[in-house]
Length: 175
Length: 103
Image (cartoon, rainbow over all chains, first blue to last red; front, side):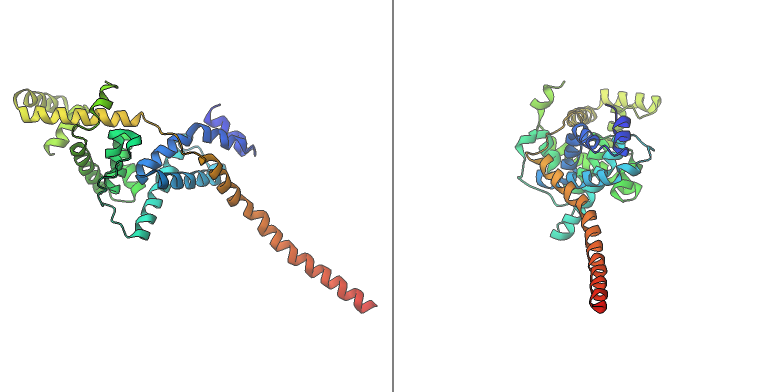
């Protein structure tokens, strides 16, 4: 079933269409939230909050983008606002380095990304994993275009240096 | 444009043909630039590897989400009920008062 068909069914009041949408994008939204939040627990909360927003907004979706793009945008916005909320509550700076907390289950490469300071991790993920243009990154992160470029640049350098030899075996399987 | 940005732009094919050719010459003659290219190639391969990765949701994720959805969507009938009940009680009170008055 295509996104358009799912949307039409949902708008007709067939709520099971929403669960079809969950089947399709649940893992993508969770993975994306994980990369913004930096840990599994916050990713679960942020991605579930995103799904609540998607559910509430689905009837008003006007089709100006694809459904997938719209879902991703909500997931990014929700994950970033949850992250900022957490930082406000705990008074943690967005550029705090997390040292020694390597979530091994995600593999060395992902772990290096997850341990990058929040603002760099978000910017680099948006640019180099999800391929968003700088203008979109600036809009999602509510920062200026030049700040978005700086964050991506510095984040890339930090991540490249952290990667070092990490994950070589993982990459060799793919090349 | 610093060296890292230039190397990355070269690898992504974002430079003009002329600049790209100059960069190619530099890579062939300067070992430290060659080293930079290798580092950024490795970075790009790792990021590409990540873009293909999707993780499963934790156990009980869907059940928890359904609970949250049900909770969020059930508040409307409750608001409705809370509005109607006092209204019904008022009507009932007025009727009883009228009945008592008539008696």
